Image (cartoon, rainbow, N blue to C red; front, side):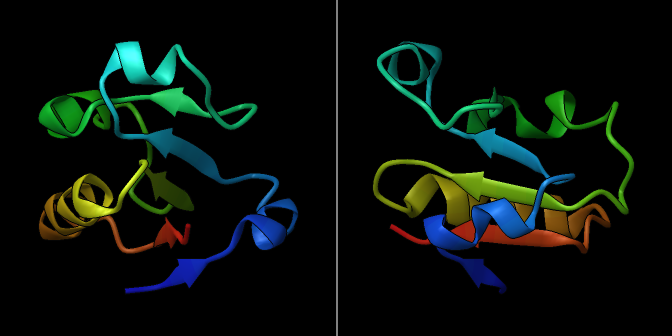
Length: 85
């Protein structure tokens, strides 16, 4: 697994930043330019994005971002990053 910090986000300008929390959590605050695909919908929600795209996953505590990472990795997404708290 590859990790990045919030300070490193500016180095990933072309990355897709995915908040894997539920929509009500996303609506209370999120990273600018991020999109919301809840972990429960990650496999269907990711289909329109190229498997070579850099993808950064985040949530509040970490459990859901790890689950999303594993699911995406299992279907061939390899340019994945987890945002550290």
